[in-house]
Length: 473
Ligand code: C2O
Ligand code: CU
Image (cartoon, rainbow, N blue to C red):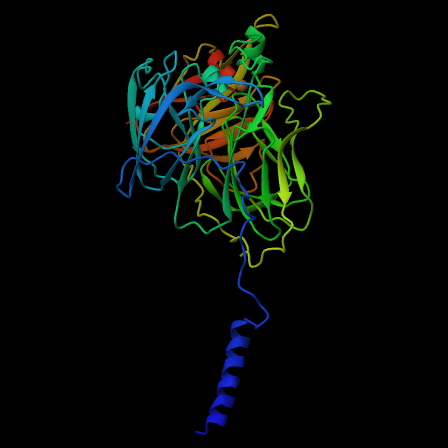
């Protein structure tokens, strides 16, 4: 074959290949770089792993008071893990063993609860399963993490006071098999009460009134910062893992002019992506979002009035954070979101036991108390059998929202006031709106023991809106 003819044939073959693969010479490879320093103002440090084994994560936490400049120009004695607000992010892979060695250097006893993680009952961090960790003492938590998702950790003793003073951190469990959804941005939303002299607002501020309404700190924080900025670039997706770690405050927010897609919640990815205009997170809840910026301007992300009291309100939105659109050419080649994010089977509820949970109040305006099913001292005890499914009907007969949280197990919401939720997802926390019944299905496994369920407005839990579940073989 002459070399001219060979070259001609090669050219034909090459152009065929180009046609077939659809990869024209003008088309450039994907460019999905975030702008330089995009998350510098927000990135939370990961806890150091002190165990070299690839499937063991050993974290050392020191609960202690630390002087931190939260409000510029003021020094506040914040209650911290390792001197940080929030505490360091514990990061593990699905299936890892996690060992957390906690030392308590606080002026009072504490424990740590692993919110949303399916740990053995003895590791759950409540006063029903462990002795309080006294000042100067330590405790070793050890468990495997069976589920991928966005979780968090916080004390379970005097929880409103201790969480409110700064004790909380995120716990992320990754799964290498998940489709990449964008560069991760972890957003731990919270608030704190700081007086003009920099001191912490007393934990019992306003007495009964504070307990009853739930204390919100006047300083709203995202990753311990006041209105921090994240940079973004058109066409380059970000995956936001959002935790509401506030003791009482609900976080409702929207990103003006930028599309948000809800991809997951408390227990990892949901069944499929759900485009949303805004997000409303009750205390304890998590949301996973993707944000694929479109052409637009830098904006302030407002903290909208969540109106958990259902009262007419003229509250102006506060600023939550800033989104800065980089002045760079748009990124290219972001893959579309998969249509299916996770396989979440519906729960077989044939033969399920049923129980009813009523979040209620008793008494009058000079001293109403909050409780569950008529018990206002936290002494209510449910029992259930291991490896069974139960359907719980959750109602709220008060006039205000309360988030229900169950320790140790995920559930699926079957319906809210008869309406099925738009996507199937695993949850450990669900908001209860006055007058609307929420039916959940809980598949219990073999982790027998004493578990709690309660309102995650922590002032309410401390006031008696909490109960126990005894899971027995
Ligand atoms: Cu976030 Cu009883 O817990
Ligand atoms: Cu409540």
